[in-house]
Image (cartoon, rainbow, N blue to C red):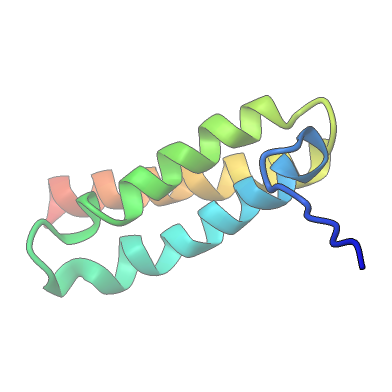
Length: 86
C-alpha cells in the first residue's frame, strides 16, 4: 500500500493554515486574560503568524488569506486596545 501525505506548508494549503492560526488566536486573545501576560503570549504570536502566512498565501487562495489577515488584525487591535484602556 502507498500512503499519500499532504504537508500544510504547500502553497495550496497556506490559506487554510493562515485561517486556522487566526481562528486559534481568537481564544488566545480573549479567553487567556487570566493567564500571566494575558493574550500577549498566546493570541499575538498566533495572529502575527496568521498575517505572515496569509500574506504569503495571497496568490493561491486570496479569500482565505484575506479573511485570515483581517481576523488577525482585529485580534491585534483588540489586544492593543484592551491593554491601553484596561
